[in-house]
Amino acid sequence: PFRRIAVVTGANKGIGLACVRQLALQYPKSSFNNGPLLIYLTARNQDRGEAAIKSLQSDPLLKSAKALRDDGGLADVKYLPLDIDSNESIDEFAAHVEKEHPDGIDVLINNAAIAMDGFNINVVKKTLHCNYYGTLQVHRKLLPQIRDGGRIVNIASMAGQLGSKYSGNIKSRFLNAKSVEDITRLMEDFTTAVENNSYSSEWPGAAYAVSKAGLIGATKILAAENARSGSKTLINCCCPGYVNTDMTKGNGIKTVDEGAMTPILLALGDIKGSNGDFWQSEKIVSWER
Figure: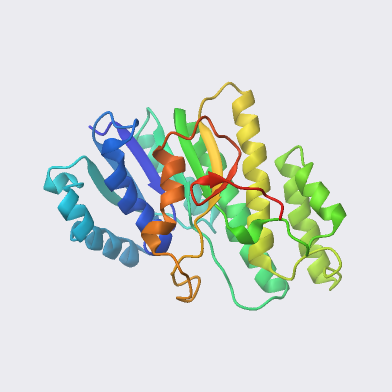
């Protein structure tokens, strides 16, 4: 039987797939290691998910480290379908995990996200639906299943920093938000402002950036609420850096495995009780810039 269970969303390629590989590589030396590890590699598309599993089975790094159980290691990787854009898919996934692992799971890495070209109301609605609302829904459904002392890592982006494109009013609403509803209201106000073409004095014209600002804000609040409930689970978000993936159209400067380093530190490492923080390059960074 598996002693530890991890879930990585959007894991058929890019940073998500690298997170699965690095979990398998780094778990044996981590303080979480108390026996066999099962990693769920999730993706919307079954063919792509299963192809990703195959690629890991012949992965040279995993082979030389003997990380997978087939090679005598501790980690096993299974594909499960999960489309974070669909509440029905999220519900099915959560129910499956709960049924298979009634004692709970240990690590959730919320990596699934989209970055669309262009900027209009359609792009805004689709981007927020996936990156903000979808990620939040996965978090809500799986948090009750995380064993005490587990980890949740939300992959955000430096694009989610509160820079000069935000008005002072919007910035302070983000920074002083007391509930997830406060952050969700900001997402709604952004959508309305774009719809009315009145956003430019208060908001950046970038749906991806605002979706990730929302995710950072929500992570801070969810982490604080969870700690207040007495839980020792640590919930953080991070920017993986400018990584060479399909999302950056191959322009990134980091490899996917370098991009996975901070997420895996937050998932398995000694982070000195960090909770509700925004990390990059293996350290806590400011949400404002």
